[in-house]
Every structure is written in structure tokens, then in C-alpha cells.
Image (cartoon, rainbow, N blue to C red; front, side):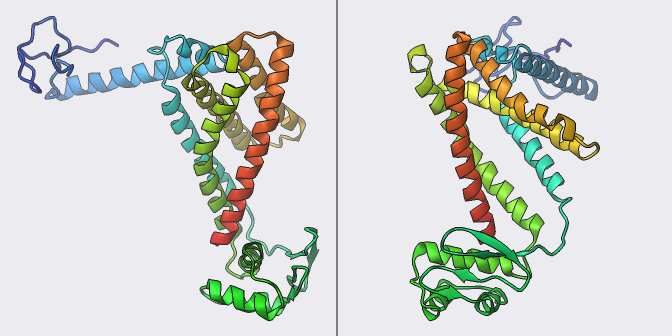
Length: 318
């Protein structure tokens, strides 16, 4: 839908005289188009902008999935006008994904969960009578943990006093374990609040993980001659693909049982990663497989670390 410009004879921004053929001011670059329009012109301009974005979005999504990675290769080849910018698409998709994830998390039950016993060997058992924290040098009883969890606010001084009274050295690790036990055993503990805090923390960590993904690509393809920003384009577009797949998985899972095709949703992102690497870099399949496997294993380690940090932060914040 072509947009009709309502032009001026001078630039309102810098005052330079404009020719009828000037769509933009030669001095400051401002568009030669007034926004003081009748309602009809305003509607036409709005529809034109929306239609142009929709066309870009459809083309971008099509070239993301078939063939996988085409949009990345074309964007890095400076054919950018036809596609939605990777950062813009990533932010939009990640917002939808975490909203979808939060909506799905509200379906968790409020039922009473079992309480966990944690000991110094790292093993745990589920018991009905309460939570006991065995830290090797001393044992913090259920009554001590319950007394702490009943308080509105548990200060660091109170945590240290409880550890000393139980014969436990107040190291940073022991403080964290005790505070975690107190938060998880408290009557105010809510699964939904915990999950949403984890999602919130993890969504922030993803802003660090995406550049890290690009850095891993830079290391693996250091001989390709590509700039880091080109690998960042890959990372942004690929995470967008993963978010879209996971959103479909979550939404379908709310209405139908996906046990028979669960494996498909698990393998699809991995398959697309290898295929995208092959499309973008053009290496032989065996070389792509080796580098893809190294990338996948390395990134899974960082993802697991990120999820652990998010879970710990979520539990400590309750």
C-alpha cells in the first residue's frame, strides 16, 4: 500500500528550502512529510505501516524456518530492508514467550508439597514430619527452621545466631542453605510466586546468555572471518526460533496431550540448529555436526547454570 506524502516547501526542522522531488531534507535528513493530516490520511498511513510490518514479519518467519537460517545469511549479506531487525524480533518474541510461560505457570496447583531434608552429602529425602538441615558439623532442627520461617523478616544476624547455636560455622554457603530451607518451609511459600520469580530472573539472564551464545559461535567459527555482530545476528534469530517452538509446545500442551510427539518438540530446536549452521556457514555436514555438538553441549552447561542461579534467586527472594 503506497503512502502519499503531503510535502512542504521548507524543512520545519532546519529551515532549508525543499524541492518538490525531495522526500527527505538534504541537510538534516528529516522526512518531507507533514503529520498534520485529515483522519482519512492518518488511517491510510497507519494501515500502510502495519501492512509493511506484517509483510516483513511473514517474510522473516518464512526465511527463518525454510530453509533454516536463510534469513541470517541474507541479513548478514546486507539484504536487511526485507526483514524485521533481529533484536526487535527477539525482544518481541521473548516477551510473548515469557508471558505465555507465566500464563502456563498459573495452572500449577496450590497443594501442600512435601518437605525436603538436605544433608551434607548433597542427597535429599522427602519426609512428612518436617525439614532437618544436616550441615556436617551440626544439625539444625525442624523447630529452629520453623521458628525462623514464622518471622516476617529473617535478618543475617538471626541466621548467624541460629547457625552458632546449632554448632555450625556461619559460612556463606551455610547461610544460603539455611535461608533457602527457611523460605521453602515457610507457610507463605507459593509455587506460583516461586516459578514467576525464576522466570523473571532467567529472562534477565538470557540477555547475557544470548551474547554468550554468539561468543561461542565466534570461537568455533573463528576462521570464518565473520564479525562478532554477525554471530550475534545468528544468536538473536535462533533464540527467536526456539521461543516460537516452545510457545507452540506450551499452547498445544494446554489443550491436547503431547506425549506421543514430545520427542519432536525436543529434537526440533536441535535439528534446526545444525541445519541453520550448515545454511549460514556452508561447511560439510560432518564439520557442521562436530561444531554444532560442541556448541550445544557448551551452551546447555551455561543454560543449566543460568537456571540454577534463577532457581536459587527465586527461592531466596520468597
